[in-house]
Length: 410
Ligand SMILES: C[S@@+](CC[C@H](N)C(=O)[O-])C[C@H]1O[C@@H](n2cnc3c(N)ncnc32)[C@H](O)[C@@H]1O
Image (cartoon, rainbow, N blue to C red):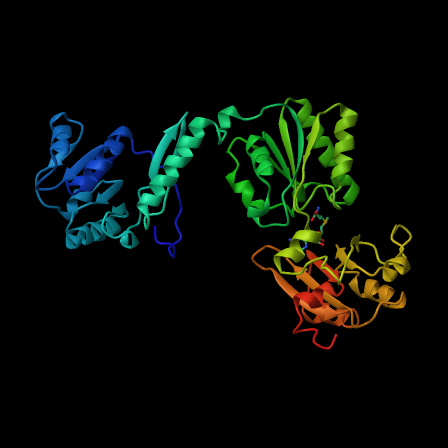
């Protein structure tokens, strides 16, 4: 498949549907048996065919039209394969297919096709199909490896999945679906029910089998405690009904994720609960943009803080004057709104206004960007750059280590 052309993989039900293969050589010979196996009404159009195709025609498994291609061959057709060794004929097949809205595979030039044949294999009721027509041999090797591993059990097919009822808390990482752990991915594929947070890597939800119940937390009743109570109720209720429930969160479930409240709710109800850790955003997000939270000779500690309450708020458990005295890196989460007040508290506590600050928005996701400032300019930079959550704010000299050009005077 051409890398530049977006494609949509799909399975086709061809049973008793007319499929036309133009050409009777070795490409056709490889494709025809698969079409017959799919139950298609296969028509081969070609003046000559290989002995194998001739045999299939003789046995009545395909209809052989012993002549050159005519556009009307594609009337009432669902799918066709242009597999001659003559580019002009293949082009004519493509054109006739396009007019009739028939998907057409091209054996000579995949970039001119509207469909591609994957390398396929089957194991235990599962079809493995690998597309990559620029490198068909590589696709075939990948297919072979996957089928082999399915057979060996290295890859667990859905039928062998863990069906033990209970709740698994899965930390999905900061957003990029590649950054979930292998254990987390497996847990997702084993789930009967997935209860997903807004910040969990949602692209992975598209891979869930169709029979999995998906509960979107963003759609539950509003209000922090009402929502949490409802989540606790849903996960406990489903697990008690014998389901395997994955509670799917962004980052790590125990880092400002209220995960332990869910553990307690499960324990109280006698529901078994396990935890699969995730890459937490205060470490993972700076890392992907090249900011180290510690660096030898610069920062020997880092402190992760929630900024969801402003300094001085009666419910805040953070003693900001003490935080200002720390010499290591500060990583602020949920702090965009209160960042100006936090910067003021740190400056009041003795931090230097020239302290470097890096704000990473939408880390690991397509809209990712980094805004650089100092403690003294943070409030105005956040407003000027229109910074919105989710963002991680890193305060400390490690930001200058990563961006020496920006903080040359520091
Ligand atoms: C409710 S907390 C959840 C944190 C999560 N449990 C973790 O371990 O990363 C949400 C905050 O995490 C930070 N955050 C999470 N994902 C982020 C991302 N991809 N980019 C930047 N910040 C992120 C932001 O500070 C956001 O306000």
